[in-house]
Length: 154
Image (cartoon, rainbow, N blue to C red; front, side, top):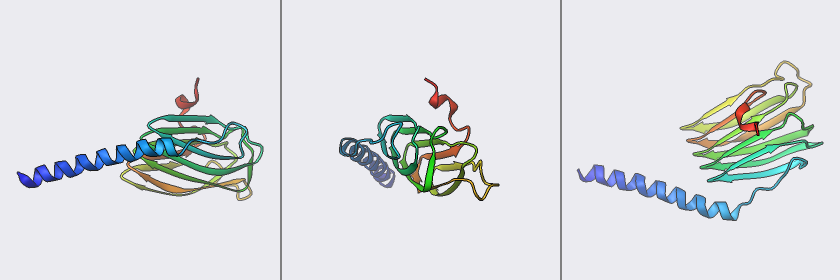
């Protein structure tokens, strides 16, 4: 009985620690970027962030979803050469919608979560390329031309 109780306390303590750390991070890391920004730094901690980009030369940036979610629509953005996004999710999710003419290269790893990347421009080697790297722990990252339609409806 003691090992089970110890394991339960360890799991509960770990979860409470994650929640406390997320609360501190929420106040320390604000989201930056709007629909015209060429670079974004989005953070969704116990919250949700929704962005429809109209950037003229989108270079990328970073996204952090910690007990929260991020939905970004890049279909009206123009991609700059060498565009790169760093995405990280912990018990959260990130959904990216890209135009059909873009190529997407993903190096996102998942531990206890999932990554779904649809590469709409895979057949065209000259297509503008968005490189995505990152890690998801018990969360998810989805990229495609028709990802999370309901998340973008107002």
